[in-house]
Amino acid sequence: MKTTANNIIHDLKFRSFVTGFKAESAALWFLCIYIFFEYIRPQGMYRVLDFLPWGQLSILFCLASVFATNSKAIGFGAMDKMFILLSLIVFMSMVFAWNSNVSFKYWSTIASWLIMYYCVVSILTTPNKILLFTIFFLIINFKLSSHGARVFAMRGFSFSSYGLSGSPGWFHNSGEFGLQMVVAFSISLSLLLRLKEYVSEIKRWRVLIVLFPVTAALSVIGSSTRGGQIAFLVVALGLLVKREHLFRTVLYLSVVLSIVFFFLPDAQMERFETMGEDRTSQLRLMHWKNALDVIDKNPMGIGYKNWIPYYDTIYRPEVVQEIHNTVLQAFVELGYMGGGLFLLMLLVSFIMNSRTKSEMEKIGGVDGKSIAAIASGVSFGLLGTFIASLFMSVLYYPMFWLGFAMTSALRHISKNKLKEFKKNL
Image 1 (cartoon, one colour):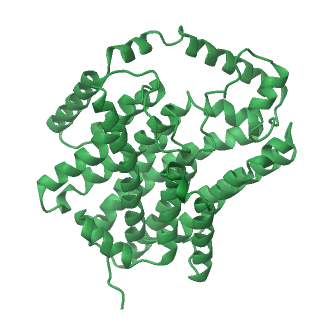
Image 2: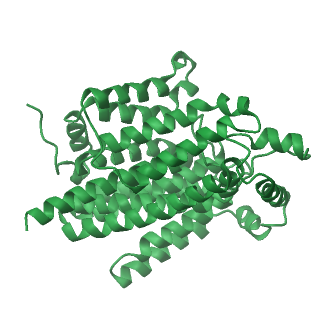
Image 3: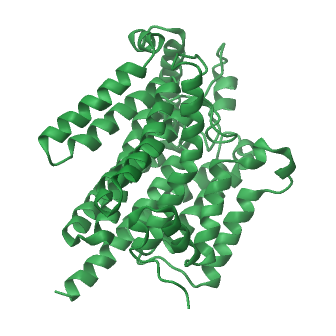
């Protein structure tokens, strides 16, 4: 008989996490393995491991486990419908793209996100499962944040034009690495603040605060990416302003601002002062202007992953780069319908997570508090991602897609728990 792990892992002990993880199905294990290979990419760091497509294999095994265990989502909500519609729009944009060959070259990326979304909403159907997954997700991000914080500290917390690099793959570039650290900071701080009362030793809780949100914060500052740093500041203020006690709120805000200004190098401050005037800003302004022209001429979009070849062929700029604005990227490649739907999904995500948080706080208990904390963290993570994405092209990166999937899973769990709560009244 399997050991029940319900409510055990809320004490945030590693032993409790391992016990809870062992008690779950193989489907959850494979989902976590997939996240590990997508985020850390050990096969990119160690050539000896690069002999199989580990990410694709793990998500396929996860999908097979979902069917084998007959796992399925609790309901079919608004986010699920919009996700399917957006996926269809992306597929149609591939078929009718300016250059379909380029679009279909990257078909596996979209296919992976589709399967990942389905697996997340099918597997994470209980508070315990989604908390286990969230903790695993934060541990994986700690591997990235600890490396970033250590490198930043070793160079004396000084400015570097190349910022910080994450693992090979999605977060190798400093901008995307900083953005992901904003997501890690949002979820980890939200969860730790909410579950503090269940941690038996205050010293351990303080250590966890340093290991997770603090290292993530230092990584954002060290990344030298202005978009990520702006997003981090907004998220940090948003998370701390919502605290109940005024004195603690003021204290937390003072600490956050002090850390930011203490560790932010002078050269980085100069980058903010020259925003809109330096060469990087001028290039992006040119890209944005041309992107608006492309949208006006192609209301149905130029097709998935077609910006670079289209821009190079039609406009022939001196420097060919991504748009560096995810909203414009969505409208350029997927047209008004795809871009509008993408923005609507973001708005609906904030609304759904807000409702989930409100419902779970009313129910209370360890399950209610943990779900409310995760919903809040995911919402702030999406907010930070959106702000930073206004300076990056990350439409097809995991931050949005996993955020949408977790939003849907949290909403299904909340509705189910609310029904159970009403029955027991």
